[in-house]
Image (tube, rainbow, N blue to C red; front, side, top):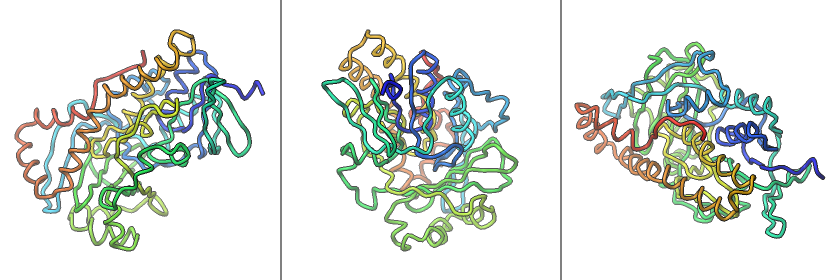
Length: 384
């Protein structure tokens, strides 16, 4: 049916997917976006946004000043010995929950004419060579689009359906990760993001919108959780409490969730930016380690990178092969080094003795620490 035919179909309504939909709609394209949840909802995420994407968000239509968000320009890092080191964040950023940010952007997308299919899971995604069309199937209907953008996050049923390489290679528990997130009530400085290291993991905490509301999110190995029979609380008491600051926070900061949000099988293996003619964006294209604090900006930047190329394809000035080659090359040039540095830093952070020595060595040299941080971040950007 004609009403089910679109220029672009976007699978996943996180930051990369919503941003891409807004840019395309503003360019006059017919866009449909599929999101399996209904806005607003919480996601497992550190909820720190680097200022490199501030101007881009404003260009999408988000009124950041009106939201009165906390501005963050310092990084505190602790280890299990109880010591805390402070480092400046020259670029800085701000705190905002995904509950609020995704919802605001989804409203902007709708107001620009994007067809947002909330509460709709994609069951099958296929490309038909003869028709040069993607076919997207849900439990209720089938849709077609000239271009499909994969924005389905860290790991999804679509990854499995597409038989992507990182799904085909199961990782051992020591290289497979679990992420746990709380919103807590706390009384901490608004301008600081804290990173607390424990055996086989680390925990970030920073202010988001709302009086006394902080995002507290940690990453640990699947092996660490398995030692405690999958019991989150038991693992926190047995492992995270070895860091005295985390023990104090987890003991005294009340959670604003009935239960923590948990995702498992978090995989930092290399992914491809294009698979089966689907342009991958955000975490679907490559997952940066959370300690870098740049996943949200990378997702937004990927949308800004992809859409000008997609527009050229839709207007006939790029063919599909040229589009996919250009996107792959540009994506790798912009992000691949960040991902490599992020993996190396995460490996360092999992060695407590080595990280204690490294932090002590770095603290007198803020320019060096900012250089390392800069290797996982980019410059301010807007859509071309």
